[in-house]
Length: 61
Image 1 (cartoon, rainbow, N blue to C red):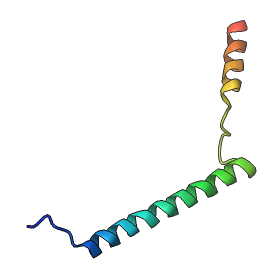
Image 2 (image 1 turned 60 degrees about the vertical axis):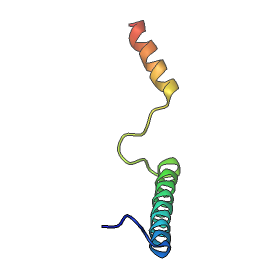
Image 3 (image 1 turned 180 degrees about the vertical axis):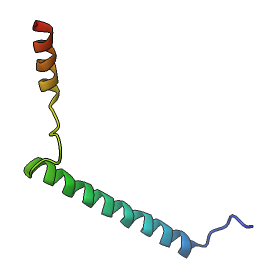
Image 4 (image 1 turned 120 degrees about the horizontal axis):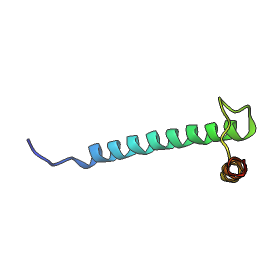
């Protein structure tokens, strides 16, 4: 078995990997848009400040 890959195959693989990556990135961006400007799916994400405040309220009691 030879480890040599002909340039056309390498090019095809690289192109395939790249547009797969671009598709994923696009889908990720869409999900971000939905999460930021739409109805959040499930429990909304809390900000770090919110957690700090919550810990402070718990400690205050």
